[in-house]
Image 1 (spheres, rainbow, N blue to C red):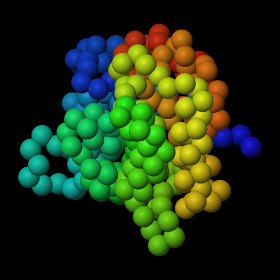
Image 2 (cartoon, helix red, strand yellow):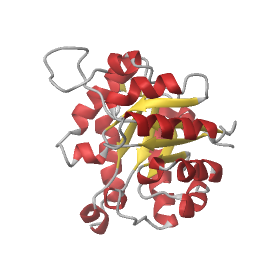
Image 3 (cartoon, rainbow, N blue to C red):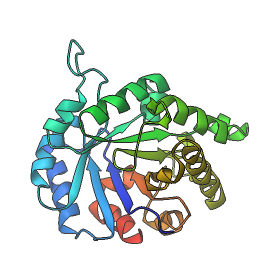
Image 4 (cartoon, rainbow, N blue to C red):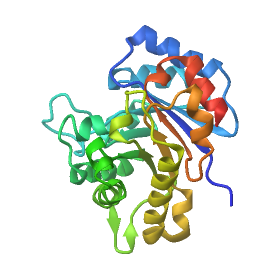
Length: 253
């Protein structure tokens, strides 16, 4: 059975001033959108509105890199899911390892953010992944299960998600921005485990939930990674900052 459409998502992280970001967004759109692949760019929050306006009608979606779990309030420096949506975005990245490990975000808080994103009509891209120590200790699959269970909303019959409102991104922490990637067999095993774990709760509906690979995906290795079973696209960091590289990865999909 064919899997869901591939999604190639670019996480610009804390890069790009307004002019640079608009140039990059337009270059991605001008590169041509393949009808078989969905493209998404996630600029810094201060650029979401401008990039969303520039990409209106192009077929390239726009997302934010985080949101707060509260609808509004005294949270200086934060933005709500409703603000993200109001700025023109359709997606939001949540639980990225740079927030889990760099800023101490717990799976419990990530779950609250996913719930807030869903309530605002956003697609949540929920990130999971093991550290190098966890990988070396043989704990990878246990860590992935724990993060999924802790970070996804739960209903009476299991995970309260669908392929329409949630994407899972597997990003081994030790591969992000390092140039290192797991072996193809390691990626295969991780994605198969994630799919099976979702199926325990969602049954066949789990097959519609896209599972992205992230962590030093670039044009040179994208074809091999995207051909792996249950790899439904990529969450791209550094390679998303150059339109030609980002589009080359999309072409590989």
